[in-house]
Amino acid sequence: MQSLASVRAVKEIMAKHGLSPSKGLGQNFLVDSSVCPRMAQLSGAAGNCVIEIGPGFGVLTRELALIAKRVVAVELDKRLLPVLGETLAQFDNITVLNADIMELDINRLIAGSFDGGDVVICANLPYYITSPVIMKLLEEKTPAKAITVMVQREAADRLCAGPGSRQSGAITASVSYYASVRRLFNVPAGSFYPAPKVDSAVIRLDIYDEPPVKVKSEKMLFRVIRAAFLQRRKTLLNSLSSGLGIPKDELLPVLRSAGVPESIRAERLLLEDFARISDALAER
Ligand code: SAM
Image (tube, rainbow, N blue to C red):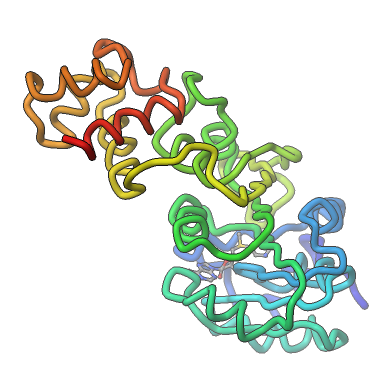
């Protein structure tokens, strides 16, 4: 089986099939042979069922299939299907599905594809939908143990930022309700063809069985988090007031009853603080 993880192999495949990489679909193919085996191992794929998003030419798919029970790979770009038919021909535990991950009912796909066993998700994500894909998987309560994804360094920094740290954002706080996040390893831009402008990192999200805080309304919690970070340079009182459309004099007693100082910035708050504000607002 010829390796797919080299600039030469990628160029050969593209020439043979008359393809060029689509920038719009975030097609930066992995050409560093050390990355995919490591990513597959660390994702928890061994002996389990795997959903891969965006198999491209199948470089990571192969490594996953070598150790997993079954792999379902979801690829949006129709042009890649004949390529995958060739590169994955030797495997009988891979199904390739031509679909847009953002449109797909993933819970139904999992229920229909795997007969029991743990499910993990593993992907070199197209950068243009990094946060939407992660939030979709979490919000739809995808029955997966873990999500291991390659993302741009900046997204990894934000996702792995500790609660209350300067790099944290709405995505950090929202994700911390569903999962613990850690960086597995960094991947330089030169490991891809075509090389993107920035470096990447592989991160792993381990999904909680139960969220770390209990709230009266999840919808309210996420509204509060989004509003708090809308104008991150402003004080919490100002950004929540404009983000939620609630006058400051009505919001002030809410923050006080939640025990959160009104002049603090959103990035300083812990998930527990957002939960208390959300509960105080839900009671209002
Ligand atoms: N896994 C391959 C690799 O590591 O070389 C390709 C990774 S490339 C960064 C992202 C892949 O996601 C491409 O194959 C692209 O066509 C696919 N893709 C882009 N948008 C998608 C979507 N909405 N649903 C499913 N796949 C998508």
